[in-house]
Image (cartoon, one colour):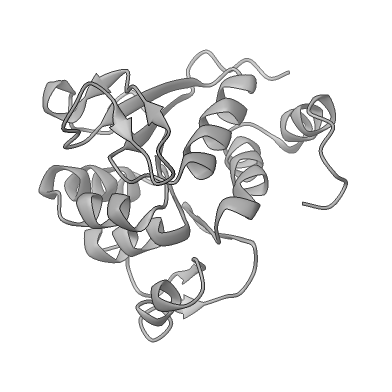
Length: 195
């Protein structure tokens, strides 16, 4: 595997986050030996109560966290409609996303998380994807919208939903490290040849 000592990723966590999108992504990034920091945003208790009732504790809380991209290589925004509403309304998170984006670092959004890209001000020239239905309708006339499972457009990565979480996370690994690392993890996890 590639030496990843310098590669660090922030994954945001709020009440209402979609468990699979959050957990699968964090797990795969850590399998790639990336240094992942789970940052809790506006969490009422010591844990986030996710969309299906799973409780997850953050590593740090946003209010106690250095809010710049310095020292980090990527930020990940999971889905879950309530999660996306919280993050889209959080000034500090939106500024952090744009700091990553403007510094050519990876900004990754899955499912309803793509609505946070829009709220943060990710330029409309990008090709994106998201969860279908009401989420898609809020993006289709704004961005170059795609129905692909994962879309990579420069430093912006977007994906569709829980069923695309493995491919989303492996794509982040591929972009941060290399395809061989992503393929090695895919093989170790016994994933299907086509995700």
